[in-house]
Image: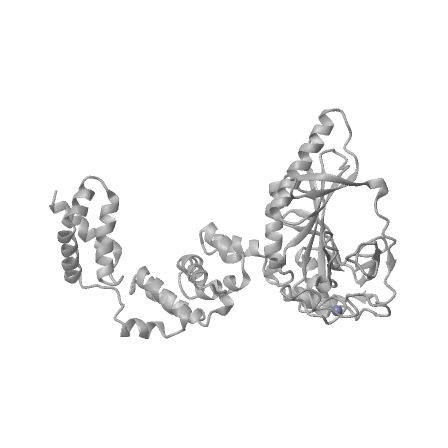
Length: 459
Ligand SMILES: [Zn+2]
């Protein structure tokens, strides 16, 4: 039996204002503070023309996912009665009479059926009956795939990449989460079960695996898999029956009379297409193939556009492998430690290039370089001048190094004898003593060499 999975994923489009009014988008706002007559559907209120930024983003998404665009977009009213929808209908570029924004795309080998734009309903709490309208009118992208997935793990990996990619072009806010409906089938004719509202990558995997098992059990006991809609219940880790497909909701789609059709000209589409960056996985492959970067480094560097841009500017001036290692390990460590984002940093690539050139030429040790990077995160400064003023150049005086190593060997007799008994760590300890004495200015490989030659004399 072949498992086939298709998904419909919703993400929040990265814009400042709602789709049909000027209310701001702010996930932190207290309930019902970013609202107006339009997004709460007061009697007599009319939508404003759709948010231009949201349209730009949706056209960008459709093209980034390789879709062909429709040149005439029409909003529809999708009717249903639910407490989160005061007007009784949702405005969407989908449904019976619509032409979606984009069709027939492909992302990482998975077919994209369609991409469209719609507004989010409010947030209703069924326990208390409380409705928060802040979210009402947020622009959403819906991406519908073909049933091309064959495992839950594949869906998870693909979705992760999709979110990264759409975050990358600043089209979708990756921090706002996603909502997913999953279609799962094990029969050859794709008679499928739809599982509604699965809202995290982890739940998506659990829901698919649960549903595949449930359907297999039905089939092996000689029963049919019914076409139906089910809901994923997080607490039970199960899908439960919602409705039969024959009783599928009739949404009574009608064209939205308050909004004009939107014409997407080739010129408009092309201007957005031209501004789109290289896709993250294309970047990653280029880093690995052309720049010889380690796969793990390349994957992280290419996953965030600011980081990738910085890396490329630095790698143009210093050895790309060295740049990749320092940006991925050291820069990200410093950012993490200071709880800062890349865009918060005051220093730029010129500082990192100065620093890495010194490391590349062996004029400072890695140890000193790391400390300088930490200092740069506080406040930028001229790295060359700082190294000279503070006397941080690598300790190249061999007799001085030998003297320090002799001292370390003589005052750490226990470590020496531990090392002779086969304890590798004891040697690192002695090397560490010398490095500490020189405040990191000694080259650890040289120190190790000298100490080994001295220890050999003790044998
Ligand atoms: Zn509003």
